[in-house]
Length: 332
Image 1 (cartoon, one colour):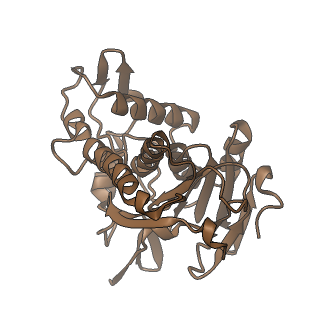
Image 2 (image 1 turned 30 degrees about the vertical axis):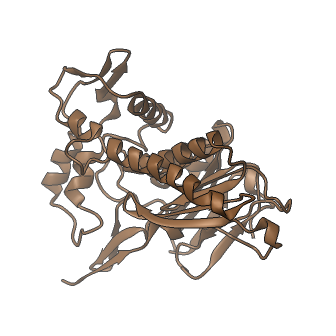
Image 3 (image 1 turned 90 degrees about the horizontal axis):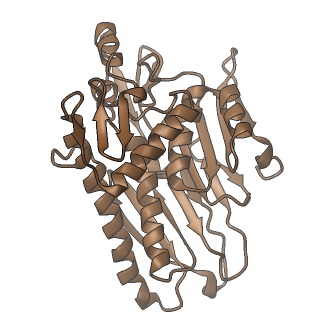
């Protein structure tokens, strides 16, 4: 059997559409690799020479998030937490406390479609290097170590009711974007945009007065962009079955695993979420993909400041698109 790996660069999932503009509206840009992806920063500053120290501030914040949250680094807080004995309590930093709190809240809100304890399962599949699915028995065993309800967070720290492995990769890049923007705003930057692996957020107003415009990659036509006008929400993230994937015997396997089954979720082809923070957009895009179109739209309807655009295949294999009401009239 022959497998073909289809691994896409995550930064193409959501791209800002930079239209021709007067010189005054041209941002100063920086590209660097962090957290396994390309981070693009664009700042609108009066003096381009001011930009480099500001980029350094943002890069420092992103590096700090990676050091705190990476489950690949054995000394990170997450790695130490994943080695915690059952019932023992570990003191954690304010940033990890905040992020875990948000993760648990979103997990509860999405009925576990987003689950930060999916680490054992994701390691078993081994994306992006995966070339074949694990054995069914191994998946069943890994599922026994998934369940966000096992994480207990209180003023004393965090404890685990049973063995689980935290994996915050579905929110870490979004959180890093938010942290970098907060640092830049504190440094006086009034307008800009940061994108990390498809997690994108802007702030402020363009000097030329033009609205922000975004594009979402078409999930089956990589050269095509679905254009979306400004809807008043500054953060966007997309999850798609083409990001990290392989094909085997005519079937596509991808890294967006359903915490309930241990298999790649199959109800959706891609899901894009607009909201107020990159962290929440990141997590909700994962959840919307796993939930499927109907539940994803229900989630958007029940949540303030959340809009969803979903691609899926019907029973005949035709690609369809659904969107929440707030996007109506804004999508080309």
